[in-house]
Length: 41
Image (cartoon, rainbow, N blue to C red; front, side, top):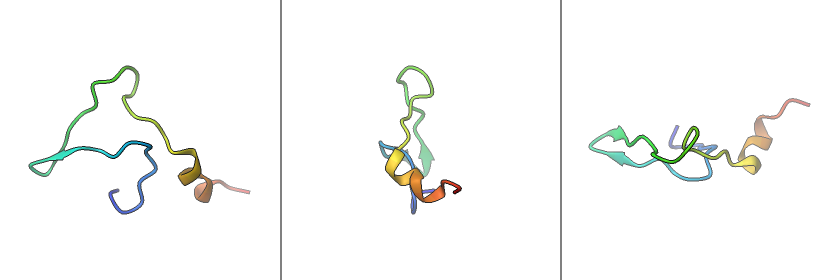
């Protein structure tokens, strides 16, 4: 997950655990450019 991340903002890792985002909705934004390589033609 950390090697090829598709999120616009990186996840915060504290003591080996992910910190859950506190922003509205899912709390994450997808990086549309990074997702292009996974798009099916």
